[in-house]
Every structure is written in structure tokens, then in C-alpha cells.
Amino acid sequence: MKYRSRTELASSILEAANGGATKTKIMYKAFLSYAQLKEYLNFLSANGLIDYDSATQTFRTSEKGHRFLKLYSQMDDLSITAKS
Image (cartoon, rainbow, N blue to C red; front, top):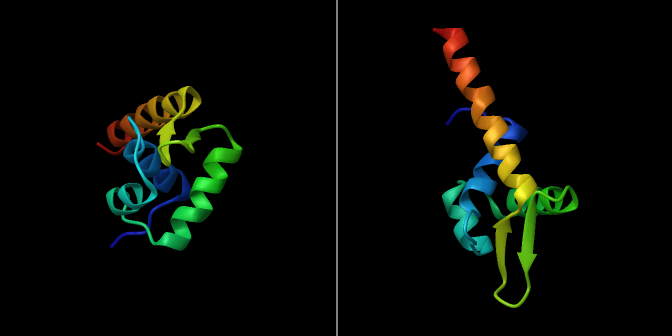
């Protein structure tokens, strides 16, 4: 398996949390260990990229998180066209 950057991992988590997801679903969708998941969820929450709903125990990508995903996608598109 190839090395994934912190930005790529954060993007995977935010994508998995789109529309709401539990820790378990995010962990499996983003292919992370539980230790990695806890670390990244704390980081993303502290920076306002992901929100936690304690009533349903789910995480949801915030508006700021959606902007991050959009910018990340644009950067990824640019790097792909630069390599071609």
C-alpha cells in the first residue's frame, strides 16, 4: 500500500463523513486504524472541519470541511495535469 500524506488522510475522512457517519464507518471507508482515526478526528474537530453530533453519535463534514475538500480536489486535478 502506498504512503498517504496527512492531507490525503484528512480528505478521506471528510469524504467518508459526508452526510454523517459513525467512527466505525469512517474508519472502514478511509482504511484507517482506530488510533489513526482518533488522532485525525481530534485534529479535524479542533480545526472546524468536522462536526460531532452527540445525539446520534455521528460525525459530519462541516461547511469549512466541504471547502477544504473542494480545494483539495482542485489541487489534485492540477497535479495530475502537471504530470501529464
